[in-house]
Length: 116
Length: 119
Image 1 (cartoon, rainbow over the protein chains, first blue to last red):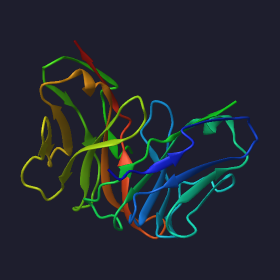
Image 2 (cartoon, each protein chain N blue to C red):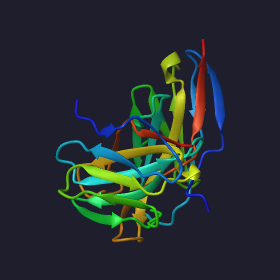
Image 3 (cartoon, each protein chain N blue to C red):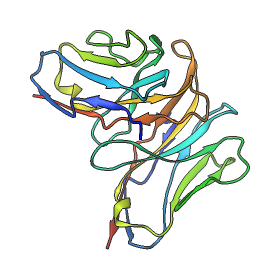
C-alpha cells in the first residue's frame, strides 16, 4: 500500500545546530503539507505546497524554518538554528488534488525531534 | 477562538463497550468537512471517518460512526465494541477555506482525546 515516507524517524540535535527532515509523498499526490505537533497538542500546519509552489506558509517561523519542494515531488523542511522549543513531532502529509472540503490527507509516521 | 474543541483530555472504556468522543467546531463557512484521525503511540495519523457539511446522514465506517449535529456544531465519534487496539489518541479535524496565503482548504486539528481501553 502506498504511503508517505519520512526520515529520519528520530532526531536529537543540540541547540543552535541545523537540522533537516525529508518527506516523500504518495506517488502522484500534488499537495504536500508539513505539520508540527507539540507533545499533548494537535498538529498545526506549517506549510502547504501545491506541486512545487508554496500555497500557505503563514504559520512557518521564517526566521529559522525553511521548506522546499524543488521538483514538486519530495520535500525538505529545515530548521536553522534549532531552539529548545522546536522539540516536537514533525508530520508530513499529502493529498491527491488541491484540497477541497472533503479531501483526505495521508500522513507519514513523522520525525520526532528533540533539541537539547 | 478555537476552531476545534475536544473537551475530554482522556477517556477510559471497558473492552467490548461503546464509547463517544466529543468534538465541537466553529466555522461560518457553509462548506466544510469534518474528519477523525487515530494516532497510536507510533506516531502516524490514521484516517477513520469523514462527514461533509452537506451530508444528510451520519457517516459510518465499520465500528466507527459520527454523530453529526449541525445546528449544535457537534461531530462526536462513536466507537462500538471497543478493542484493546483502539487505545490511542483521537483527533477531530475540520477542513474549511482559509484566506491566508494563496487561499486553500486547510485542515485544522483539535487537541485530541487519549482513549484507554481496559481489558
